[in-house]
Image (cartoon, rainbow, N blue to C red; front, side):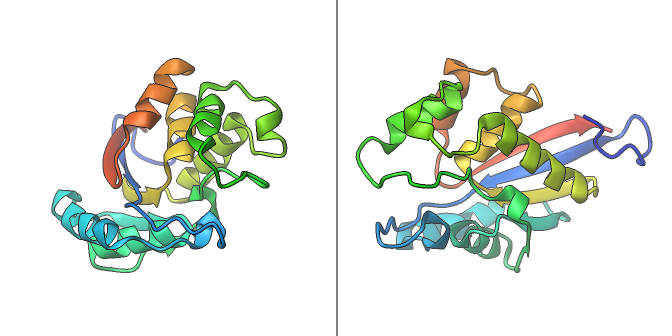
Length: 182
């Protein structure tokens, strides 16, 4: 990947990924409209102590990510749809979601994932948005599945079961910093 070809050689770009805090799941609303729970709001506020100082603040267009970024950083983020969660049209709201999503993370797509964005598609979309924001230090409030797909794509997380384990261990919220040579 050609991250920031216009920057000075030998420099390192830091991408800070902030997985959103815990939302209130509502089966009557699309997940993109879920708001944070009271515990999620508290966790997002306390995350502010861990955030890097001067960064460009970006977010997915999904409400839970916007709210997490705003609470953690104390300011509104710029939104970019490229940082949204994986497109999963028709996914049922049921007790099998973790298993179904784990299979997606492992790259074991089957009938349960019909019409879903593939891991490669999600990673490419995310990468394009990262490249659209070429500052050296950015903080991106985003979502677990898409951030793992991107980390696999750039070689920071192994694919398959290792990726699923990484995803399963993510907390709500969680800050991950990736350094990318420019």
